[in-house]
Image (cartoon, rainbow, N blue to C red; front, side):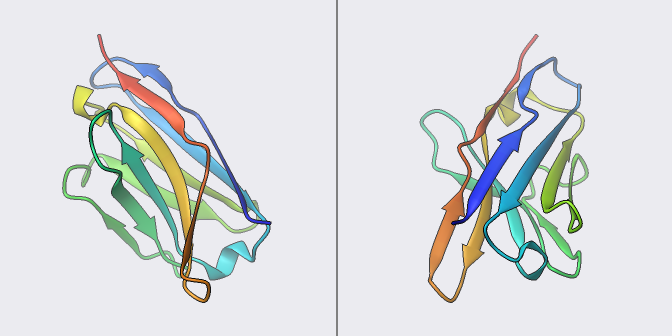
Amino acid sequence: QVQLVESGGGLVQPGGSLRLSCAASGFTFSTYAMSWYRQAPGNERERVATIGTGGITNYADSVKGRFTISRDNAKNTVYLQMNSLKPEDTAVYYCNVYDGSRIRHYWGQGTQVTVSS
């Protein structure tokens, strides 16, 4: 079955950096676009970044120029490099893959990112 396991979250000061990782299994990783979402308390879950099978990326306006999504198909892993972090980036970050043939989203368990001094 599909499994997504995130890691790399933590507490960081404003202006700092973190790198999130998501290890995927249970599907042919290289043939699916992968995304990162986040959800802050009291807010809806929002898409942060997506990387296609060919490496084309797309970002939410709020993170453009600060976050970079990448993938390593040999390791079945997707990354989110987060720089110049702001307190408003505080959220639980989720790895996501969407299976269009089943019209179903798959999610990891999430990893907490807290930006605070």
